[in-house]
Length: 392
Image (tube, rainbow, N blue to C red; front, side, top):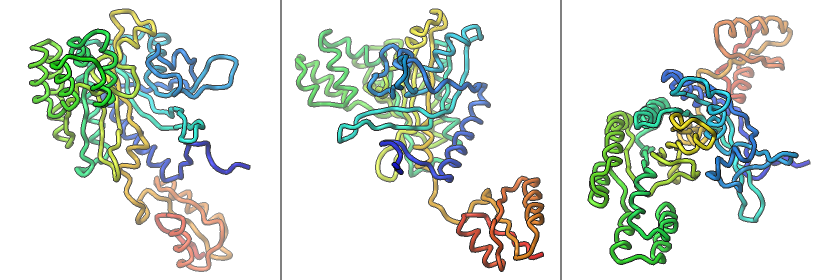
């Protein structure tokens, strides 16, 4: 009998499950305040929907051994977008949706075997609005969510922002045949690969500079305007970032504009962002998202409704970041109701029922306790709030 979970999967103890639920409920409360409605996309989807028109590499999708081409969702955006463009196509836009659920990804481990990654994700999708107003709403909603998570100054939260349009405009200055290679070198932050691409001296110097161009939005936008001129995209991006700057500052979030930043999945075609915090040993990404108009169009939306933007939070990454070491039992922990020898079990059940009626968690000690001290010791061992010993 195998006693270990599958490679890459994890068993969660009750405390971790409770923390995950608490974080998810905090985020859900913010989503609802902003007018977002909950949906529940299926865990199992057809592979063509999961691949999102080639935006997601099929090697990362955990496939099922079935007669049809099915797999487990590697993220929530594509399944929600598919549903929005089919079963919810008659609903008025903008369509504000949120969901929380497990996602599954797969890769090859060091030994060449398959590893499964199982993560809990919570996020929102705003569909049907192509203007920058939707991007502004998403970033403001992201900041409202951050305010509930209990991040501290030591976490140094940083919001990395990029834009596909910026990268496209910069790449238009390069030879057409070399643009794909340059994009890969820039988004992969690979200076060695960049050096091997045949470019003129001036072009090589510009793209070398772009590799290191990231920082305060005002400074980066100024440098980009020197290269690209006062294009409308720079003005729109500056306005969006300026609108979210006060909310970010109020929550201790540093804004960083990075023209070469791109998320892991190739779902996005406009504004992209990632919220990164400093963990105990390394930076931790706790949220990411962006605009995915082309994806909405691929799922069959009418041209005037082919627009979408959203983000997702990595619940377990947040839990590991903000959870404090276990100390004294929390006030929300259960009381232990124990009885002395000879005391009827009905008395313990009645006391437990009274505590439940008052909204307090309580569990029964199924063995008799000879003293209050014995009951206290059992309560401490079980992580209970305390013991209630009924002596008769």
